[in-house]
Amino acid sequence: MGKMNSIIICIDNGVSGSISIKKGDDIYFFITPVKKCLDYTKKKKFLNRLDIKNLDKIFNELNIFENKNIKVFIERPMINFTRFNASISAIRCFEALIVYLESKDLSYEIIDSKEWQRYIMPKNIKGNKELKICSLELGNRYFPQFKDNKLKDRDSLLMLKYILEKKGVNL
Image 1 (cartoon, rainbow, N blue to C red):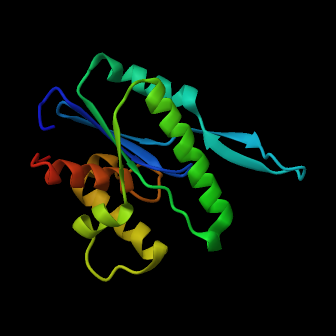
Image 2 (image 1 turned 135 degrees about the horizontal axis):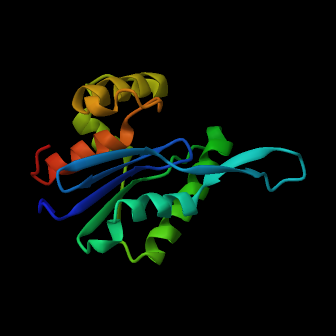
């Protein structure tokens, strides 16, 4: 996994998530590409969906598919019945992402957020709001080159840090 020619992709699942890629010595950080679509119900409402064409464009511009040593880590989707709509959105995005990765013959591993958070985050962080604040602050500390990115957290970057360190590779 630690070879210089390997590519590691970490995906913070969801339509408000992010994608971090380590290719050689370079690290890239993207907001998950989404597109607005009319909802599936009779009520006029819009929702965000994963934009596969733009995801493919990002991967092609980085020449991801020219490398055969690629490992993708995807955060398990949140499933919380008290947050039904958010859970459905996360599951829809996850499924679209899995279909895309399988169509490209990319191997992937599902990782629970609690796994990488336990390793990266300080103890006693409570609630989603505190997690996002901590993610942004730690992500900007570890990856200052992305501090101007408008995304409200750095979860995929912190996942990347976790994966690299867990596998014995340092940034």
